[in-house]
Image (cartoon, rainbow, N blue to C red; front, side):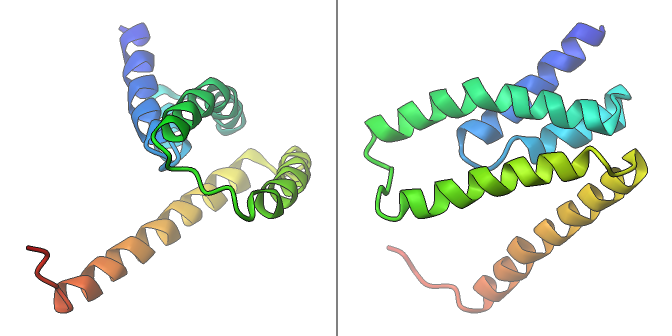
Length: 128
């Protein structure tokens, strides 16, 4: 039974990751809350699963001409640097603080699209 739960979590994270929406925002809570995986391990699994998932999604988006190359290095280089710094910093944080910080991040992340959707309902435009 456990195999199927992990498989479903992988499918859910893969679909979101393939769409470019960040599969980890779903995969990490699923692993920690429903499968009892420790927070640090769930984050590591997410990072490991991100590599092949992003390669496949990137190739699909590139084939469809959906990549904007202007400003790419100005985004990638600082992201790489601060990813390394963030990973090193996370090693020194207690698991409880990591869990609470990630939970707060998810709550804040949900507020922005929700408020934009509410504002969009008031300014709804007819497309056709």
